[in-house]
Length: 223
Image (cartoon, rainbow, N blue to C red; front, side, top):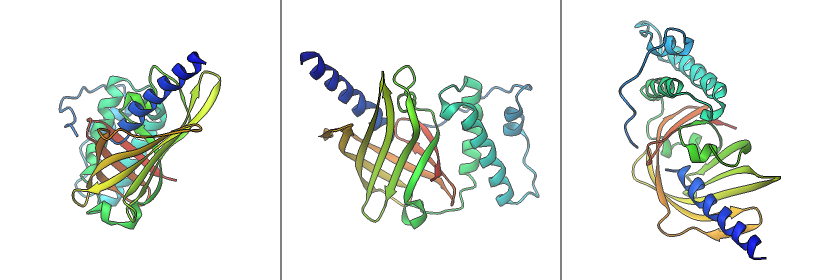
């Protein structure tokens, strides 16, 4: 019995820390290294066509970002070079954001699948693997959000989630107050100190880019 209680408490603590990171902006590194052997690197450092339309460039960037995200398994296996390449592509797509004040647009709402992040805790690096999609739901009509995923704890897949309350600061940045965690059948309220923020820096009908308050970047696609 004591072992079961200890295990449950440990898993709950892990859940608190890892789920909180999903909502948690430091500037991206300005120093990058070029490798002529990398197609993605060549694309990231290529000079843009001055006569190319923004729509065409957005499509190219999204394709490169999602390809790199898939290649690195959401960032889990990304090398330092690949991380730097993603930062470059991410920043360029941010600069072409077609949606002002995304938090005020209905298109931000709904379920989004996490395709890439720099957060090791969310990826489960060095810990229990994630199974299937990592989903974030946003509902600005109720100022709420929810992250959900399934984690393989040794032999057992366990669904877990965290709900949060949103407090918009402006049209793209919102503070986040975590409300309740769910780990399998166990639910518990989040400590009052568990807070974060979301800065939505790009939004279109298919892709959303977000920066968190812990310096992580997130690439999400609509489900």
